[in-house]
Length: 211
Image (cartoon, rainbow, N blue to C red; front, side, top):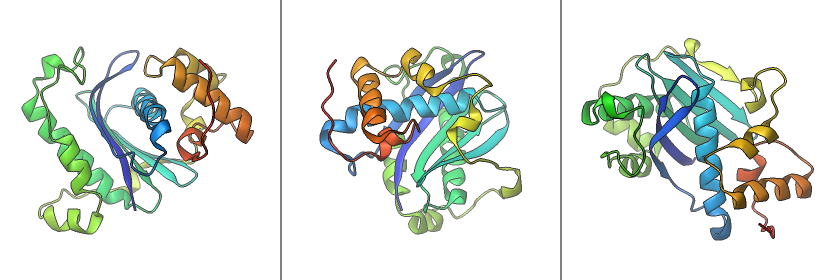
């Protein structure tokens, strides 16, 4: 069981603003980690943008699951984990992080904040601590009741896209992805003959990318 990323974002009227994030990329090739991190950021932002206020959802792609919680005050959190990691623990983590974040960071800073300007340093420790869900459960002595029947499950990332939208176009327009990551996406797609967004994260083979 593995957690790969934990992000806090602000859901704006047209796009999501990344406020803080932590990553565990130790299972990926060293040379691919930068692109993988950018794609996790891109994915987290896209999910928050397409999620309704006050909603919880899980998006499944191959052996990965992305869990999102967007509060009614527009503050959102995303966890990217493998499919074996318990969803309930992920949402417990999101509840804890968003509550803590909202108490430490003034809401006036959410719309325009960035990872460089937001003073919140707990994400890395939370991501490390929750790698073992059994220990995480033991540490969280008081947990809010979570009605899992209200969690929306999307079987693919594509189900979040609007009619006529293509993931390839969103990748090319994304502000979260650098030129190398966009080129890497194209290379992976050509080599694997697959256009799933998760292919970039799933791929362990080194590809030569020209930028």
